[in-house]
Image 1 (cartoon, rainbow, N blue to C red):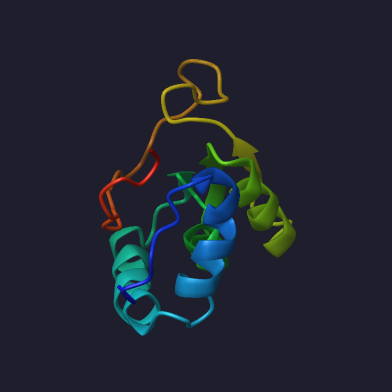
Image 2: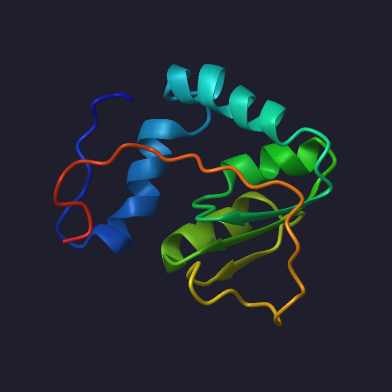
Length: 125
Protein backbone atom coordinates (compact mmCIF):
# COMPACT_ATOMS: atom_id res chain seq x y z
CA UNK A 1 0.00 0.00 0.00
CA UNK A 2 1.10 3.52 -0.63
CA UNK A 3 0.10 4.74 2.80
CA UNK A 4 -2.55 6.98 1.25
CA UNK A 5 -5.30 8.38 3.39
CA UNK A 6 -8.64 6.73 2.70
CA UNK A 7 -11.46 9.25 2.27
CA UNK A 8 -13.92 9.00 5.14
CA UNK A 9 -16.41 11.86 4.77
CA UNK A 10 -18.49 11.40 1.61
CA UNK A 11 -16.39 8.35 0.79
CA UNK A 12 -18.60 6.98 -1.99
CA UNK A 13 -18.20 10.09 -4.12
CA UNK A 14 -14.45 10.33 -3.46
CA UNK A 15 -13.51 6.66 -3.75
CA UNK A 16 -13.16 6.50 -7.55
CA UNK A 17 -10.86 9.52 -7.60
CA UNK A 18 -8.88 8.25 -4.60
CA UNK A 19 -8.41 4.79 -6.15
CA UNK A 20 -7.30 6.32 -9.47
CA UNK A 21 -4.77 8.57 -7.76
CA UNK A 22 -3.29 5.92 -5.48
CA UNK A 23 -3.51 2.53 -7.19
CA UNK A 24 -4.13 2.43 -10.94
CA UNK A 25 -1.96 2.62 -14.00
CA UNK A 26 1.31 1.94 -12.21
CA UNK A 27 0.84 4.44 -9.37
CA UNK A 28 1.27 1.69 -6.76
CA UNK A 29 4.09 -0.67 -7.81
CA UNK A 30 3.06 -3.30 -5.25
CA UNK A 31 -0.41 -3.51 -6.76
CA UNK A 32 0.69 -3.63 -10.39
CA UNK A 33 3.82 -5.75 -9.92
CA UNK A 34 2.58 -8.19 -7.27
CA UNK A 35 -1.19 -8.21 -6.75
CA UNK A 36 -2.35 -8.09 -10.39
CA UNK A 37 -0.03 -10.93 -11.51
CA UNK A 38 -1.26 -13.10 -8.61
CA UNK A 39 -4.88 -12.50 -9.60
CA UNK A 40 -4.08 -13.17 -13.26
CA UNK A 41 -2.32 -16.42 -12.38
CA UNK A 42 -5.05 -17.61 -10.01
CA UNK A 43 -7.77 -17.03 -12.60
CA UNK A 44 -5.78 -18.09 -15.64
CA UNK A 45 -7.89 -20.30 -17.87
CA UNK A 46 -11.24 -19.21 -16.39
CA UNK A 47 -13.52 -18.28 -19.26
CA UNK A 48 -16.37 -16.60 -17.33
CA UNK A 49 -15.61 -14.26 -14.44
CA UNK A 50 -17.91 -12.13 -12.31
CA UNK A 51 -15.78 -9.39 -10.75
CA UNK A 52 -17.64 -8.43 -7.58
CA UNK A 53 -16.44 -5.06 -6.34
CA UNK A 54 -14.85 -4.30 -9.70
CA UNK A 55 -14.11 -0.71 -8.78
CA UNK A 56 -12.75 1.10 -11.82
CA UNK A 57 -12.33 -2.25 -13.56
CA UNK A 58 -8.55 -2.67 -13.57
CA UNK A 59 -8.71 -6.38 -12.71
CA UNK A 60 -11.67 -6.95 -15.04
CA UNK A 61 -9.78 -5.34 -17.93
CA UNK A 62 -6.68 -7.40 -17.27
CA UNK A 63 -8.69 -10.65 -17.18
CA UNK A 64 -10.59 -9.65 -20.32
CA UNK A 65 -7.27 -9.02 -22.05
CA UNK A 66 -6.29 -12.58 -21.03
CA UNK A 67 -9.32 -13.86 -22.95
CA UNK A 68 -11.93 -14.24 -20.20
CA UNK A 69 -15.53 -13.13 -20.55
CA UNK A 70 -15.75 -10.74 -17.57
CA UNK A 71 -18.71 -8.92 -16.05
CA UNK A 72 -18.15 -6.39 -13.28
CA UNK A 73 -20.38 -5.10 -10.51
CA UNK A 74 -19.72 -2.40 -7.94
CA UNK A 75 -22.05 -0.65 -5.48
CA UNK A 76 -20.48 2.80 -6.06
CA UNK A 77 -21.90 4.71 -9.03
CA UNK A 78 -18.69 6.71 -9.56
CA UNK A 79 -16.66 3.49 -9.82
CA UNK A 80 -19.10 2.05 -12.35
CA UNK A 81 -18.89 5.24 -14.41
CA UNK A 82 -15.10 5.15 -14.34
CA UNK A 83 -14.98 1.45 -15.25
CA UNK A 84 -17.30 2.02 -18.19
CA UNK A 85 -15.21 4.96 -19.39
CA UNK A 86 -12.05 2.84 -19.36
CA UNK A 87 -13.40 -0.14 -21.32
CA UNK A 88 -16.40 -0.84 -23.47
CA UNK A 89 -15.29 -4.49 -23.67
CA UNK A 90 -16.19 -5.23 -20.03
CA UNK A 91 -19.85 -4.71 -19.10
CA UNK A 92 -20.28 -3.21 -15.62
CA UNK A 93 -23.41 -2.67 -13.53
CA UNK A 94 -24.06 -0.91 -10.27
CA UNK A 95 -25.05 -3.63 -7.84
CA UNK A 96 -24.17 -5.09 -4.48
CA UNK A 97 -22.89 -8.62 -3.97
CA UNK A 98 -26.05 -9.40 -1.98
CA UNK A 99 -28.26 -8.45 -4.95
CA UNK A 100 -26.62 -9.67 -8.15
CA UNK A 101 -28.26 -8.42 -11.36
CA UNK A 102 -28.75 -11.94 -12.73
CA UNK A 103 -31.56 -14.48 -12.60
CA UNK A 104 -31.03 -17.33 -10.15
CA UNK A 105 -28.85 -20.03 -11.64
CA UNK A 106 -27.39 -17.82 -14.40
CA UNK A 107 -24.04 -17.42 -12.67
CA UNK A 108 -22.00 -20.54 -12.14
CA UNK A 109 -18.50 -19.52 -11.14
CA UNK A 110 -15.62 -21.56 -12.49
CA UNK A 111 -13.28 -20.15 -9.88
CA UNK A 112 -13.73 -18.09 -6.77
CA UNK A 113 -10.99 -16.17 -5.06
CA UNK A 114 -11.12 -13.42 -2.49
CA UNK A 115 -8.71 -10.56 -2.86
CA UNK A 116 -9.06 -7.83 -0.30
CA UNK A 117 -7.27 -4.57 0.01
CA UNK A 118 -6.65 -3.49 3.59
CA UNK A 119 -8.65 -0.42 4.53
CA UNK A 120 -8.28 1.97 7.42
CA UNK A 121 -10.59 2.09 10.36
CA UNK A 122 -13.63 4.22 9.78
CA UNK A 123 -13.84 3.53 6.05
CA UNK A 124 -17.45 3.88 5.03
CA UNK A 125 -18.63 5.61 8.19
